[in-house]
Length: 108
Image 1 (cartoon, rainbow, N blue to C red):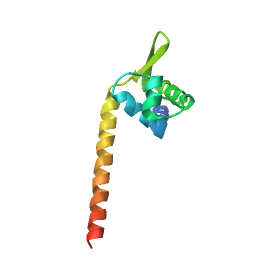
Image 2 (cartoon, one colour; image 1 turned 90 degrees about the vertical axis):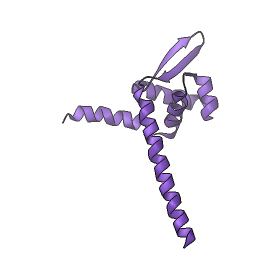
Image 3 (cartoon, helix red, strand yellow; image 1 turned 135 degrees about the vertical axis):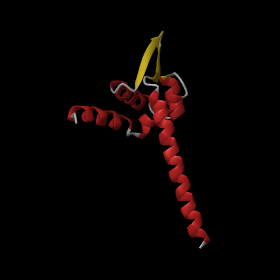
Image 4 (cartoon, rainbow, N blue to C red; image 1 turned 45 degrees about the vertical axis):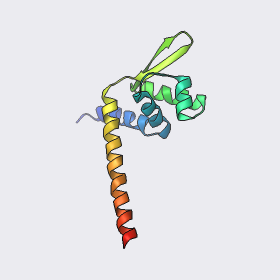
């Protein structure tokens, strides 16, 4: 196995292992957005959003384009949307399982 490949893989995983960056990715799953739109949607500081956009971009997860004074961001790799749909399903199933356990315990 190629250790360098796994180091690169780890860097991408680390880039998405952050609540702000996850919110940015979810926001961009709905389509192209300006920095201002992202700030409004995720309700965060401009400096924090810009820093995290830079991290996502450096790992090849998003791309940008300039149009006049605006910078628009989109997901760079279309399969990331599929990955996040899968992740959402995993979380949903885990939540259902936890709810079933709670219901079972409260009925006893």
